[in-house]
Amino acid sequence: MTQIGRIYLLVVLFFLYTPIIVMMAMGFNESQLYELPFTFSFRWYEALLGNKQLLTAGMNSIIIAVITSVLATSLGTLAATALARRTFRGKSLLQLLLLPPIAIPWLITGTAMLVFFYWSGIGRGMHALLIGHVALAIPYVVLVVGTGFKTIRADLEEAAMSLGSTPVHAFFTITLPLLYPSILGAALFAFAVSLDQFVISYFLATPGYSTLPVQIYSAIRKGFTPEINAISTLLLLGSMTVILIFARFAKPGDTSDKR
Amino acid sequence: MRSDSLLNEAVRGPSGPRKHRMLPSWVATTALLLPTYAWLTLAVLLPLLTMLVFSFMSATPMGKAPITFTLKHYRAFIDQPYLLNIGWTSLVIGFWTTLLCAIFGFLAAVALARATVGRMRETLLILILLPFWTNGLVRVFSWTMVLRENGFLDNVLHMFFADAGSISFLYSRYAIVLGLVHGYLPYMILTCYIALVTIDDAIIEAAASLGARWWTILFRILIPMATPGLISGAVLTFVPVIGSFMEPRILGGKVGVTMGTVIEDQFTQAFNWPLGAALSFTLLAVVLAIFATFSGVLRRGAAA
Image 1 (cartoon, each protein chain N blue to C red):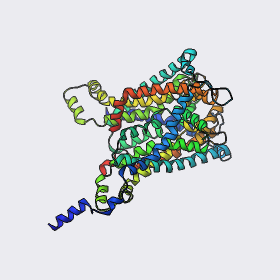
Image 2 (spheres, rainbow over the protein chains, first blue to last red):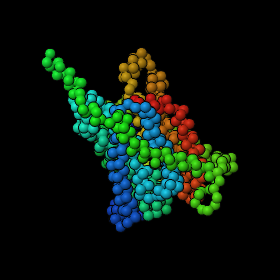
Image 3 (tube, each protein chain N blue to C red):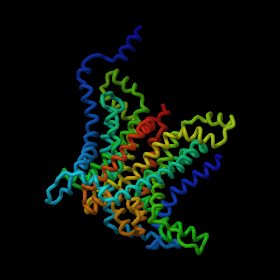
Image 4 (cartoon, rainbow over the protein chains, first blue to last red):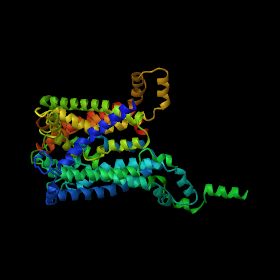
């Protein structure tokens, strides 16, 4: 039984990774029409270097992801502190309000943002994308940091405060250092959420300002070339690296045993 | 005695001016929460409200045409019967995706929980979840490389049967469902695994030693125990799938017309925002109904 189970898991992994590996390999194939036999070439990566549009979009993606990560982590950590350590009325309602950005299909959220930003004069473009990305990342930050809070004993802060420390001082000297792995993990996660975000960006991008996934989508619809494989490979490797680092920092379900 | 009084002082804390300097508790709480919730209000709640208003408008308020308020966009399903077909297509695609994810995801979760331990399990779990957190668009695009005519699938086939025709099924509903299953399978595996991993080995050993066959263990122990995971996985698959638009576009081509692509069109091609808004809200109503139905199970899943 154990053998069958392991073989089945290998089949699942094969299913999950085959298309990705095929796609990556085709970025290194000489033929423009993805024809075989396979001839190894860096041609499409070289072409990428000359593609201003994709490079600019890639740069935009990274900048947005960094700003999103910083903003969402700061705001989300504050909110997580209140939700984890303070008692107040309406807490469960506030926790429920974190769900819409995660649970409602992004198509609905994205089109709603488009309508509201148009109507209110906020408009589209970089600032609009930032507003959207940060909102999508905040719930994940609250979740990751909130989980981090569960692993820290509240009595440490209480002890500090009963010894005369102010709540703010206790937070910065006791809680924050203990929480640091979770916060770093949350920041990485927010970065990945923003880097991979397509739907929201698609509705809020302008012809002059877009991100990499938006450019990839329009390229796919126009008729794709192996250049798209090359840039997609870079994007996938980028986000996989970030997520793997995240997995090292905030092992889900593992931290609570470390006391 | 002396040490006791010291300890008491340490526990109670020095009484005195510090207490008076502190702000009232609600001020600090509000200060902590305000930035996040103000941001969410601006970015999510107000937009949803605005879209609700737009869905009752007679036309997109861009030109000079006077705007009146009407229910006609919500009647679109009656006035334009082809929308019913499209809605049905979305539900069918959602149903098959969810069913396939549930079957294969549950089995994978059982295999993970029963056939692996320690580091191997941890590595497998990360490998399974890794694609889920990468770009969905790129993963969908990857399938075109496999499924297209003379793509990877055809080439593998021709290695064994040189003169076989093409079995390419890109631009079909099968391709859409396949791409969506690929996208959401990791999630189903995770939710089922979280439910299954809590099962005590002793229960299954006891059942086996008392003579239970594998199907008894499956249907009497594993499936009932995994039900919360199966339900949350199913909800969290079905909901995004019925709102998907890039998967049907890229993998479905001309046959890939779903609620998602129709809504996308209203905002990017047809510029009929009120109709798009009404369709979005109809979809949202379906989504909320699903969440409301399963909220109990989902909440227990979130607490675990």
